[in-house]
Length: 173
Image (cartoon, rainbow, N blue to C red):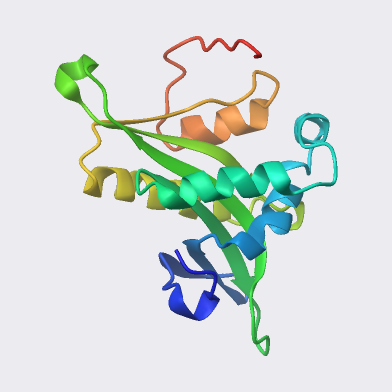
């Protein structure tokens, strides 16, 4: 992937609240905005600590080098502006599996929309794009995790057709 925004075609473009919302692949220069979005709530503020971007840059390099992983930003372009402002992000990964007769699945993570743009349909635009892209790539299911305390997120995903079918577990290493 290149770091030039001019070389990155939009993945999706939509009119939202008097502006143009567009999804595009993230560039290294988007990392400060992405980290800011990830840290913009009580859970994220506790996880995304420390000012150095080094660990994020290493992760970006790995994601960028692997076509099975997409790091995407959503930007809002308002009339009269030359460049958009990053207001949303997510990561979409495509995972092969032996179960389900060798089915591929997609996993969406790190879904964030800036607080001032929540409840304007942007999250739904992003997830619907992910669903379409997952189908296009031949995935038979899409999965995600969301913290148990994020009840509004649970309602959002359920409204889009996701089911709380499994109990997730993690082990901090």
